[in-house]
Length: 468
Image 1 (tube, helix red, strand yellow):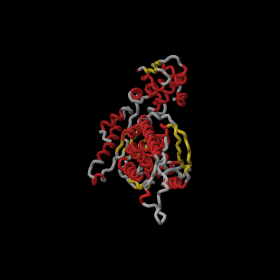
Image 2 (cartoon, rainbow, N blue to C red):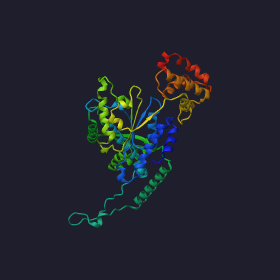
Image 3 (cartoon, rainbow, N blue to C red):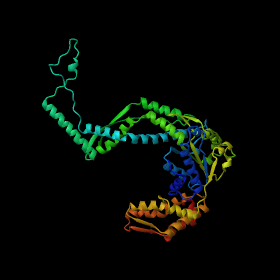
Image 4 (tube, rainbow, N blue to C red):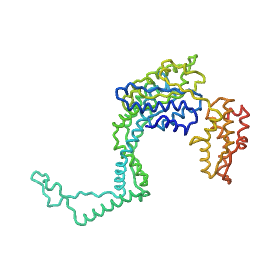
């Protein structure tokens, strides 16, 4: 990951409108990971990541920034909801499980990279196995002639031990067989036998699901799964596949055999420790209210359990011990019913960088509908194109949609850009239903079209609460 902060922001701008402060903060944090890898080892141990807390209402881009950042960097990344964890001792998942999930993510990244390294050899081995299926090799062993003698002790003499005798006809047959196998190999390489059928025997194990959810049982769950994998008998299934399908199946098998599992696991742990990113969403939901009852009981405990992980501790996983000292944590929350200062002071100190995301304006909605590579208008145009319909959005239609989204957010609960999903679906519901039967191949959406389908719902606030 060698993108500069400016390049990272430019990539995020392709998908996310506005929120420049948040983009700059995450871009600098990611670049600092790259910088840390290039300083002296003694100093590298001293440099810890500066965790970020993003504060802003729902639907303004907090989660989207983190999701796009993960795709962009290729670093081990997981997104977790703070509300799914409970204090140790309560029924539910403990916060240490997020580190185990991060290692699993890193394992997938390392395994994918290693598969690419051994893929050529795996494809070669797969072709050899396919040739054996299409034209099995003949046995090269020949029983010794009657003139072969054994020594006095009844053992074969060294001279006779390697002797095999074939007739001229058998030698010609073997040579012809070898030539045919080479022809099949060349045809496989050229893709001329993709539709031929071969028989594949696959082996699977029926591993029971283990639903522990008991305090501190995550590590034991992994151990039980591994134990069942070893003792559960394999079931063999024979399937008829085309050469093309069989090659993919066999390549996967050969890759697994060529991979060094111990090396992959150690590399995954190292990658998670040095470049891992954990995005904790809905962190404002673990702020304990004044009434300590029900679900609030363990919220303060979740904060206490988060403290050592964010600060730096060692977590036991099935792949070894993982240190969280250099894992980057990005927390996000709306904080519409609480404030960041309501969190434990110790936890606040673990997130020194605070970024406040702004409410979306009408102009932001217009940009969201038009600028990103995967904007909603472009998505619906692509969907209608599959039905042979050319869907066109006029600028005044986009302006009207943005106006309705903004006004609805102001009158009711502000859900940010998510309001556009409900409005767009309401706008095009009739078209989506009738599209397969329509003879008209071009549909133009203008302000009048939008007004006819949206205005009545937006005017009736009681109705719009349930629809928009």
